[in-house]
Length: 131
View 1 (tube, one colour):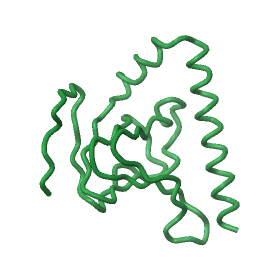
View 2: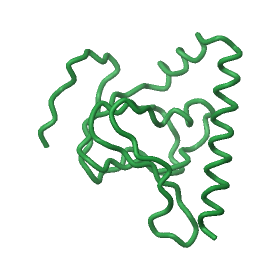
View 3: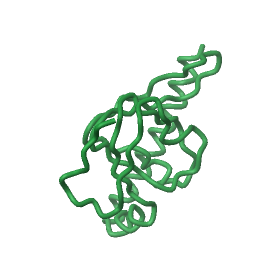
View 4: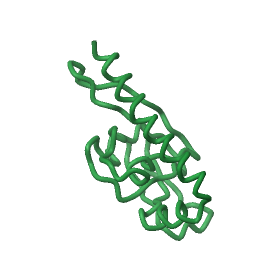
């Protein structure tokens, strides 16, 4: 794998993950969110009767993922697997929570509602998809 270090100074750390490796699994507790610096990540959700589950999204440079578990302190709703050699910027939970707490209370409430709705929609979609 020939991935160069970021030209920017990301003080929270980066993680280099090979294609085919998992960042986190559905049901894991979340302690970090991630920004894709380079490469690609696929998010999948388990679906009864389907070995591979359902693809919820394919993420590339600039995409943020893993944030939902930090917003609502619930387990990961999907599995994140790198489909290419990938460099991720790591956002630790304490940094994420500090940024959220600095936001306007209205914005914090909207973020919680969006996360709750995204979880509900993904769950409903997965159930429908599995039938």
